[in-house]
Length: 149
Image (cartoon, rainbow, N blue to C red; front, side, top):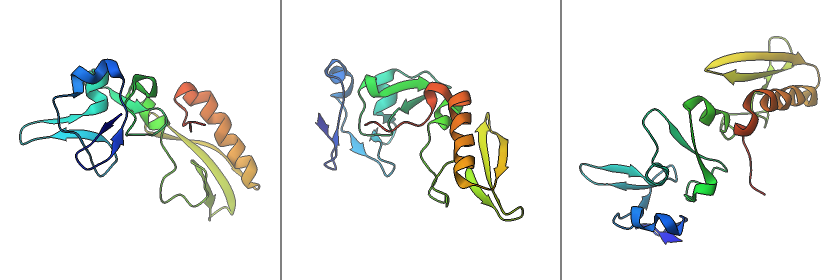
């Protein structure tokens, strides 16, 4: 366990202590643990994972203060987008499900490689949710959004 300069607790593997010990870490507005100086910007999770350019580090369970390797994985941008939380402006409470005002039915869709794939229109909300969940399992697999229990 470490503490940022602004008092936030964060986690890391003991084996990574030598990588992170020479920086004064703080929590940014998005909850990531970072180091910033006039000429340098480092995100702890990228440093710990030695993430190559063109890839991202996914916090599997969305705990941006938890930088243990068991909680992180190197992914493509597309894979990382599969593991997103519910958008703040979502009104249905389920990703990819919304009320289609024109057709007066629930619509389900999923984003694949920055393209929207229509999953159907449904009279019943639960049917739309089921279609979305099945599509997530089919297309997202291990990158599907997870909440740690």
